[in-house]
Amino acid sequence: MRSNFRVLFTMFCLIAMPVVFTLCQPAYSETKQTAVIATVSPDWTSGSYSIASVDPVGGPRTFQNKLGSTKSDLTVTAYGKFFYIFERFGANNITKYSIEEPDKPIWQFSTEGDETNSNPYDLIFVNEKKAYLLRYGSDKAWIVNPSATTEAAFKIGELDLSAYNDTDGAPNMSAGVIVDEKLYITLQRADLTVWPVTHDEPYIAVFDTATDEEIDTQNCNCDQMGILISEIKNPTSIQYLAENDRIYVQGVGDWDGATDEDSGGIVRINPHTYQTDLVIADDPEYGVVSGMAIISQDKGYFVGYAGWGDNTLYTFDPSCGCDINPVDGFENISIYGFDLGVQPDQNNMLWVCNQTNFRVDIINTETDAIDESIATELNPVKVVFAEGEPDMWDEGGGGDSGCFISSLR
Figure 1: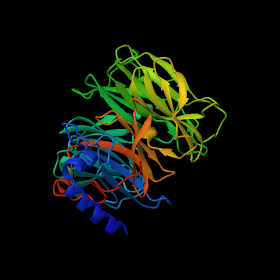
Figure 2: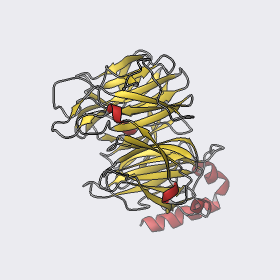
Figure 3: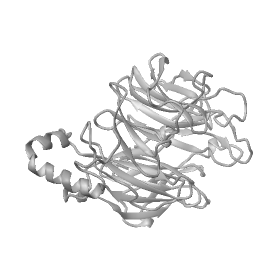
Figure 4: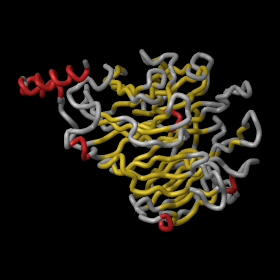
């Protein structure tokens, strides 16, 4: 039935070309951008990834699912036209792809050094030949060359974070951002040798990206020179907003309920004075603050975690931590990926990983309405954006795509 429908609909498109072209192909942005979506199986035993066109606004967007097979503990990042799939704990490697040929790996390199289970978490780019590899299970971040063609040429240096180690021997670097040639790295300082996991006060270590030397943010001439974050614990994401020149750090605190401590929330940092202040904290009304996306100085989103699979997406005003409201259609569902860092696409659309319905919901941040939903088949866990688009789409490929009913509206 679906095949017959496609044939009939294609004939209609050809017959009524001037009208249907307008309906099926709204205007695209001048610069092409493609979403890369890391996905996992419902039983968390395996993973894969999908790709989807960012344009057109209003849909239908072109997309393709299950482009590769990976471990379930995975994440993804992107820079320019390239994207990088991380297989984390137990696999400890990174695979590089070009968005032009998203199913063909360029290289796969190990992230293991002298230690085992380095657990790669993120790659923070200075440029195409220099980036910082955050390794959650190690006290050494690697300085790497993402353009290297051999594994021997990949690692070009290290950042020593051992001063921030806790009982388990690692500071648990989790996320990073570069602002004004300074690298900010969140350090969770979680003791993974005990259960329930305990957390020391986190720090943000700051490094000069020109010299790779750590900056003494406290003028203390001490071992732990970073920014002490006393307002929250267990930071998982960090984001810079150029509009008001502030850095935002989100932490989930005691998300697993091991104690009665309310230690999650969002902190704002002045990148010139390193002063911190609390924007929003855990509250019984919405639960644990388990992810964020800062759109502007007066518009942001966060995920309220009430329990496993019971999350609600809220809007709020980051300038005051006020005007908190649930987003219609995103109450009491399983929302994933916000704790890994979320950025809007070039059209200022926010891509939300909706695991309850096995799809990514694309939100218009002006209206908070769903612009389109992409069915990913597997559970989406993180979305990033690469510049350009797959060559196969220019050739008319791309799986469930084009004028056909390729998504949920």
